[in-house]
Image (cartoon, rainbow, N blue to C red):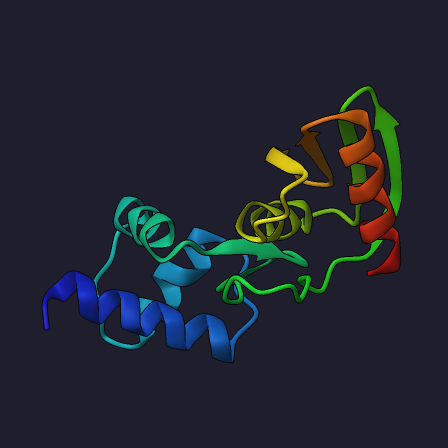
Length: 137
């Protein structure tokens, strides 16, 4: 197993066992496990693994199914063919990734910040369907 593969396996294990929310915390935990890593290598590993932050901690997103991540929607508002979805701080990336992977035909794509997800929809009718679906979850 390559050094990068071993480090990524360790990262998967560490985020499953601990609530780690920063790259510095990951570097520190890796060092405690005897694995040398830099912030830049951990950053690349996070991107390679597709990790997202939910609730202020790194998580591996669930497989592409219809089960939404543990995100509480605070507000969802229409804006032309766009849905603006407000969520708790730190959870927007998980929701954005879930929507991108969900294959909902109404959705063209998403842009996620820290607490807001912009959902680009195919039409106003598609936007209404997305808002209705999100309100049920």
